[in-house]
Image (cartoon, rainbow, N blue to C red; front, side, top):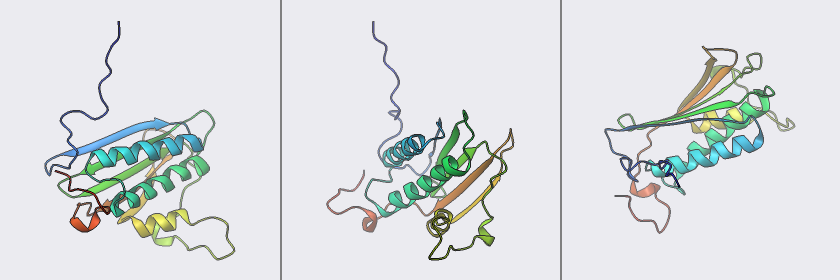
Amino acid sequence: MTSQLPSPVSAHQPGRCDDDLDRTFEMRFTSTPRGARLARRLAAHRLDTWGIPYGTGRHEEIVLVLGELTANAVRHGHVPGRDFHLLLHMSAPTRTVRVEVTDTRPERTPPRPEVLRVPGCEDTGGRGLVLVGALATRWGWYPRPEGPGKTVWAECVGVVLDAGDRPAGSEAVT
């Protein structure tokens, strides 16, 4: 006897973004490079099903921001045996996508956005949050309220699909 698992995309969620719907995807991932890669891939697919198609500038920007935050959770927030948590939320009425990545390491916090410094030419790291700051409308972090750690978040505002944002040769999403 076989049982059918529910589809990750319900029939109620069409391939386009209805203006009255908010959508949320959240999951825990292993705090490893493989976990960060899986989080990025699943979120990219979810954005596509929500009406922000692969190959568009906004899709690539959001996935890049998400990729940087998950990579930072693995590199700077890793605690052996503990996962990181990803929350991806799209608010259709405000046309905002919010990415939140929570890890369990409280002592390694990022700088506040207003004091973030641009690394020099010889620096080998430190560009991830500069990239997040350039692509996201706003970002920040706060201590994890229910335990040790922190949540780093970023918001991308204005995620509306217009004719100029579609990849070449694609049809309009209806």
